[in-house]
Length: 336
Figure 1 (cartoon, rainbow, N blue to C red):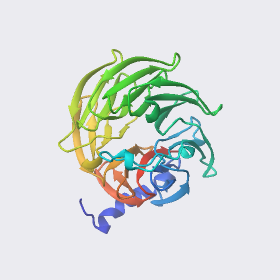
Figure 2: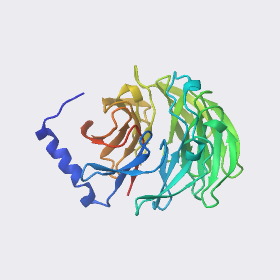
Figure 3: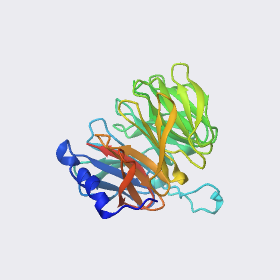
């Protein structure tokens, strides 16, 4: 890990502290899987405030108007790869659900049913939530207004990443066990196609025009490229030796894709137009969740084992601050 002098940090920290004054203020929201809370980071102060939310907070997304946060909560015990699940305590099913958090009041309003062990989800244009439910081996359609699941579409075992297409008409969902992506039509609630990708696919991100999707394959260390018109995986691009690609953040213009690499401790900068890796730099311990600041000058990564969030100056590709949050930070959301 590179070490910086206090003097070297003065300029980027001053830049960061001024972010709020140069444009609309924003905050960074972190879901903490082990401490039963979310962390709210003020980028100007470089500090986090923790707010209780519920067990195993993972997927985190905002409502269309930005007034609410939805957080996937689960009472299932942590089960890292290689653990004998028969030795784990029984799940607390009463803790499962989707937490509804009021941004202005900074408090949990309620918890609505989200299926068994919800992990990740996407928010539709009409407010419907599309949730990966591992125990159901599918994507559940949750109507928050009714507080009920109205449909579940099979995707294969261990569904993980769930992402809405830019036009809002389809959902792409990964199956970790099968190494596939299932394309679901929202209007008809039917699976259109299952696409083979790599081993243990995690997240999915689209180009702004929706023409291509990118899937991180953790156990292959690759990024699969899907042509969305044909619904075919066209190639799998190696990202680097020893890297475990996980989360993704796409720039608004689609020119850069930032990828966390878990045990690889780093972020990969990928250029979609050339389908090449531009750079790789270290950010922290097992980074997972990732998000860009509104001006795209800063990058935030959730580093699970060290219980902190790295603040990265994209111009210099350097970590300018690590902010302590809750235990095992998982998801990152930037909200203006």
